[in-house]
Image (cartoon, rainbow, N blue to C red; front, side):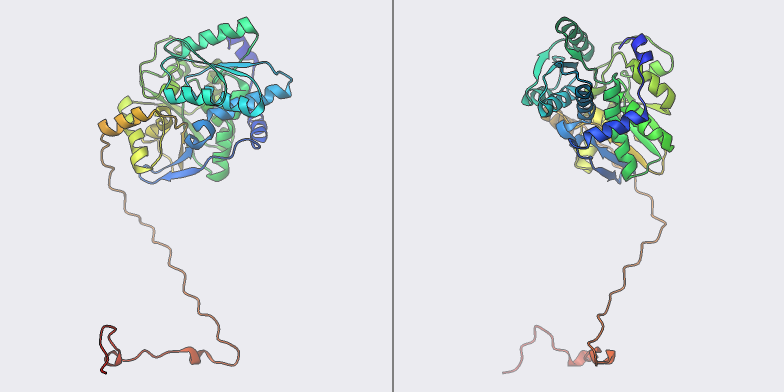
Length: 367
């Protein structure tokens, strides 16, 4: 999206509410899980359809386009999760979708896109190279180009994550991974008016949005990272404008922290998350809050990568939990059923036999 177009396009909290009304028929709310060792609630978007929150934005964009009468084939560039979300949404709605993915995309994500019948084109080594190729195909063939994050319908769809969190939890801090900024923008639009603090999370060396929000527009090649879903060289222009107004802070996470958090999720919480999915929880260690919630954005992790991590990464033992000062609630008193009519309560009183008169169950009675 060009800067001129981005300045003319807007997205509001009302758009998020409209997206929730559209998606209710197709997507169920994902659960919340309390990670006691981390002291943080987790919004489990790794259990979403196609294994990622991305399906929300893709489905909302296709439904909104259909309402406007735009039935053109839709093309999108994606590292994997947006492509899977678009493929599933197009399958459900009977529409045509083309996805362009980098050759380095995880095999599990490529297979997921093909499973739902979308056309898959592999091009380039990075998301940005795939994005440039998708732009060319859209211009040549008249396809509708759907950004993975810099689109008002996509942002509104992702914002339904925030609405579900607010309905179930009433948090004071929500942590969100940031690549291009679509999820963070949508969640901020949904929750900021309720006084919730929104914290973004990025990986060291893959922090284009954090630098852009500080006024640094230098384009730097992102480093290799386990969080391939947020490996974006140029963040969105519309998302940047939204986050400039609504985001409270960005936490930069080291790669080693990310890897350890992913293994902790698997071993301690029994949850499979991809690198980007563990990013918000990794950032949560540095953020204070009485009721924190981190979005586990996806769970599409290659089995080989998970096996290597479980073999190589040895998480440090957690700190000893603080002693609870609050007394436990007393157990409810056992209720004695009322005696039948005509009998006094004393009629049901049984006097225990003295110790000497009791029979040991293992004694043998005389013949």
